Image 1 (tube, rainbow, N blue to C red):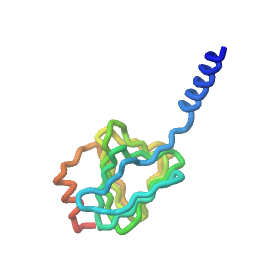
Image 2: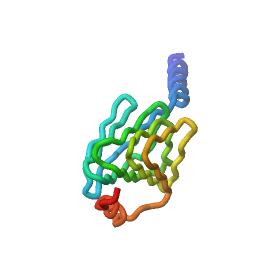
Image 3: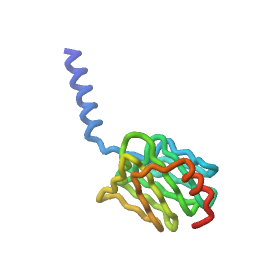
Image 4: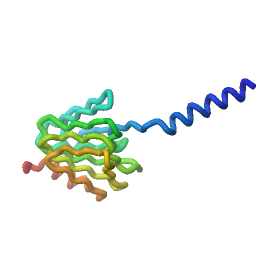
Length: 145
């Protein structure tokens, strides 16, 4: 009888996890190609501040924004190149906030912006192309805004 009650409790926990809303923020972000800055997150909000005109950020855990969550680009950088790694598509279901900034998102697995996904940026470009290391260096060192 105890075994049966344990199975029922475990099944209930599993079902609640399956149907709970998936919250997501980008993960594993590192500034690369000579660029620098800070990435902080908490309570469904991520703040990204680049130090130079252009920032290259490689996201080892992928780049997605869950419903009700916010990713905000600030700092001195005018242009942010985000490279998503992994096997998942980038899902933009929350708010990408980048007032006056240009945001580039590359994910060879795809980028989906849902009906609830909102992008507030000077310019937003998403691509499924890959980008060479040399092209990332050119982006990082470019003086064009």
